Length: 167
Image (cartoon, rainbow, N blue to C red; front, top):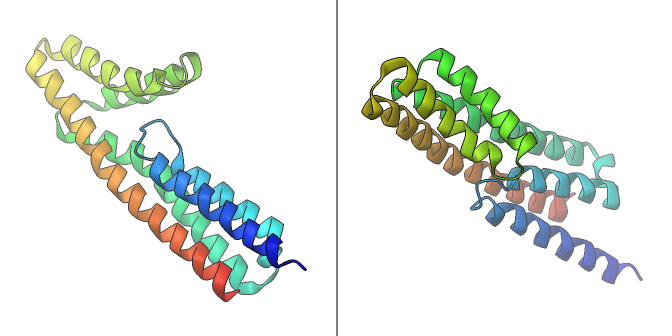
């Protein structure tokens, strides 16, 4: 009787997780959060979080999502710092990213962060090459963060598959 419902739930969850996974290729798309929300919805709809293993798997998925969502800022800041950006530049970058996202969604933060680093570092050092080096460091940190986030997302999807087929 419920076989079609289980198949529909599995198919819809798999589709949304794939959208989250491959949506990360778009810099502003919160793919890892989409995967987490999908896992949460799956647990609620299937009631499989009632088992201990379901809760453990969802807990691990949650931790991976939290790591993945914070890794961008950490690695972007570390890359910019390695590229010569000052601590003040990093604080300004985070503020600009937040304001840019709020005032000009969806691309405002994506544009504001490197622009803030470039302009502040040029203002501080009066050297475009040093300012661009800090921005390249920022971009490198973001690139590394992307690969880590994507890898964590793949692990999250695999954990959901284990959850579906084992629990």
